[in-house]
Length: 288
Image (cartoon, rainbow, N blue to C red; front, side, top):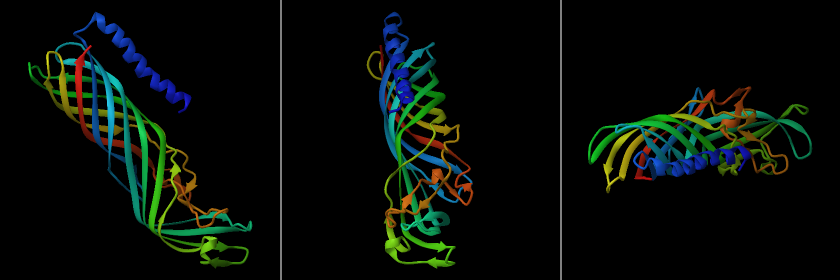
């Protein structure tokens, strides 16, 4: 884990510790919570040749809150979740400069049929929000709004295709090779590429949560709510790779870069990518 991520992780933990120390002076105002979530995440893309889709994930949350009065309160905490997102294309083709195992330069041409790609990552989230709730001795309705920082921890990407067709144009000989397969030229069916690291920026999101809270005991509550998070910043990073690259050392082991880090021609595959999420949260809140 990088030094930045370690420092970021310490901030909410230190805040929770300090708030816990202070709680002895304001027992009725401070509350802590523990809970989980089920979510559906999408890396939403603008103007792309690939179609994005929504995939399920899950997470665990720790929270701290301070009540301003009976209806208003401030909330923060820390969450860990696992998310998956994906995109696909029925047909995709491109070319890239390459060098074969004999040191000969050529143009590597390829076509993908039914290509799909899955991005997956553990994500550290730090939300800050304000909550309004109705009055009631047993059941209350609530809404919460705010912003969160979402840090991707060791994100990975894995792609596959029903068919990959490759060829090589050698300008020096003015010839196109469509074989042999051991040199990386030909048709390859049901191909699964090796998992790769994914370069992606951390996400800043605005969120809204609405739901109901039910009293459980003297000063404890159980929350059930629906939430939505909207990405505020572009996540694209390192847009200078080809989706498929020729492997000079092992020609049949093609290099599959993430579409998020790739270009087609001289233009990025995506103009902008943001992280959007929707889901269900359940938590148990208690006084401290």
